[in-house]
Image 1 (cartoon, each protein chain N blue to C red):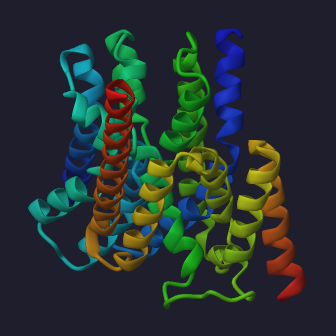
Image 2: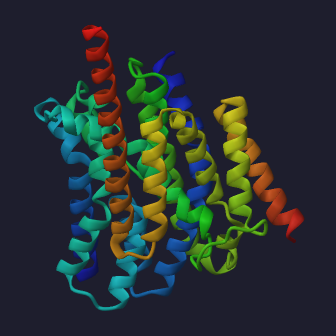
Image 3: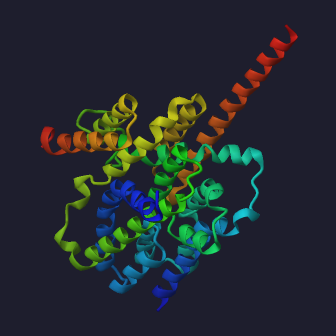
Length: 107
Length: 242
């Protein structure tokens, strides 16, 4: 019982955080400075999520070596994206290099 | 573009995220099966809370006999980044009927935010963008429910899922979204700052390292942008004077 209450409370908190701004819609007006700041959110938050996954995939310090498949795959992705500018191709190349490295080169 | 094709495109473009999230769904289900919650409560959490990292953290807190208030406050802090996502995407959904805004808000995740940020960067005024958004949301949601259930039922059969590194699909997709935006100097510097702080702060609890990284990145980006536009204005004044 307590656990169900805990879960439903978590759900309420999370729905509030996720949906409140969307629900307010046009009633929310951001000042220009904040709008400008929000423009930087995608590039910063996505980078912030993946950099630790690439640099220390095991959570045990910096792994700047060729034996780190995440690092090798990420470098391949950046290269593929810069050269081709194609999203799907970038993902395909990255996954190909990553799994080749993980299952072929390092295995 | 029809509603259906827009929906399908959103679902398709989310596929790498779906692959990346699958092992975490299984692992979550496995942990529930091994812990104090009933199996149906684990599924209820995936259905109603639907925010992976806070679900994992809650399991840890329940096992540690934390009180309700602590768990709810932790959930709030860990999920705070979603408010930032909502604020960023708001201009693209503010015109929609309320039922759409409730729905898209409920289904917002890291992965769908990434997909939508990339989508709106490419086509800021797509009239059926909300169908694309919904396609991304529902494929992610169905995937999370399915793999939670698999974990609850058969978790013990997949001991090595995490070491497969399927979450690299998410990393690859994020790179494909971020790299084209790095052409501008303020964006590039913002990303470098955010990545650096995120790396240094990865062990800070409640995902606060991530929030600090975003704040640092935004600050650096804003400073550079102002400095450049200040420089441009000074240049214009010099031209006018000459």
